[in-house]
Length: 194
Image 1 (spheres, rainbow, N blue to C red):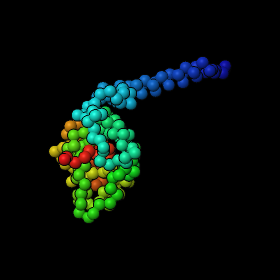
Image 2 (image 1 turned 120 degrees about the vertical axis):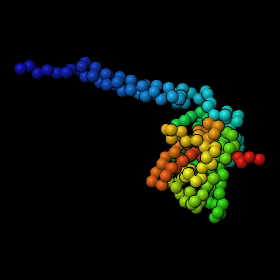
Image 3 (image 1 turned 90 degrees about the vertical axis):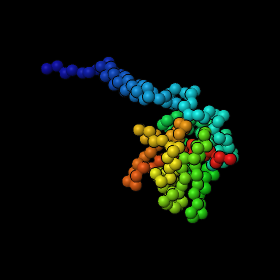
Image 4 (image 1 turned 135 degrees about the horizontal axis):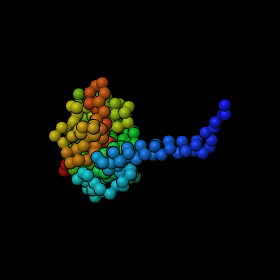
């Protein structure tokens, strides 16, 4: 009986076929998701789907450090108006000028960065410390159903949360306590109406 060997050529072919299959699956995944909406990561940031354009995003933002204001406005445009999937960095809201304390019984109203629609009012049904601690634990401001201003907020079938004008806000990530809107602070940093 003669021993057989796959040899280097056959091994390269098998590896190459596996790599090609992996690449094909990746392209199919991107194509599938891009057919429902463009991914800014692959298709650039050329079109806006909400009413905001770079010149319409509120500036100055309500919660930002003055030294980073231009960067935060660019982030607001990129995350809130030209994207459906991505988010600001986890925890970035904790280094902003967002209040770390609030007097008992007081609430904060959060406004759309583009349209200035009121979107959330918090805390409701819990203390500010509970709101802040839950948000800090998850990395983004986290709102519960009782804190949502429903006439201005839409939860899409895939869990994406948008404002009434189409501004991407974040995602609904339900947990054992119920719905939890995990929201980009930059998208709800519009100033109150004057």
